Length: 334
Ligand SMILES: Nc1ncnc2c1ncn2[C@@H]1O[C@H](COP(=O)(O)OP(=O)(O)OP(=O)(O)O)[C@@H](O)[C@H]1O
Ligand SMILES: [Mg+2]
Image (cartoon, rainbow, N blue to C red; front, top):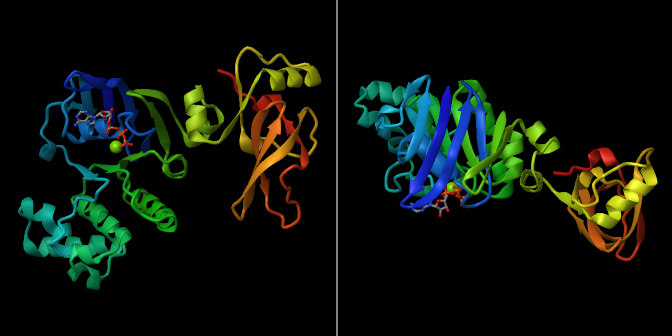
């Protein structure tokens, strides 16, 4: 339903997005993921209508909207900074767009209360000034304000980035629930790979003005199509020539030793398994996070990481020798 067709976006002479091609389905939760400055916000703002592309088309439901003004697009947007009106009450913030549209007072009132209920804003909070709310509460108001206008498409630019870790996870789940319930096609921008993996139906991984890969979280994680995606979407070990040679010697495989091998750190284990190669190392560092311990080992002159589930029993110290096992099936080469 949303289509970017050969879209190029420029700021003066600088090309921020180079030939963007994407198709987003109706009702989909679609995420733009990538590092800072790669063009996520630029692409989103082009869909909303704040930026006109220098080439290509933006199409919604088969209609070319490339030159349609923002207010005619029926696309809701939540900015990273919320952009709420700080001196207005929560109620007035949510009602604002509907007042601009000149809806009847009674209708506005009903809609404000309905959405407030959905998004868990209390009657008490509706009367407060936005500045009296916490970050998470303001976040909800920003969402309510966008959703109440019943947009066909909802664009969210890093909407959870100002929240603390626990609140982010709570809000993440709430957002997903709400999106499913309302069935709104949602475009979500983040540079947080975990957020992208947990929320999205599909993800587009951006890199420096281009898209590297589009796919489901599962596919992007397990079948990354480039070193960039593989590295950005998870924690990986890079395997150099010596380790790859050792794997080939032990198992008779023919990994290309002229290229780097990549393996997800959670695929490296410290228990012997059939058809796994053994790499011996020495523990250099450990990071305990409760559920898991992340160990860094020095193996054949390079550093490898692996994760151990905390069983309250096995806990290695610096200097311990550990045998790591790696399956050649888990080694990616590009
Ligand atoms: N108004 C502007 N004028 C000129 N260049 C801009 C403007 N806005 C963004 N850029 C440049 O365009 C590129 C893409 O910026 P964009 O804001 O889309 O990145 P982003 O992926 O959203 O990054 P972040 O994760 O940091 O928000 C960057 O190199 C940025 O410097
Ligand atoms: Mg941005």
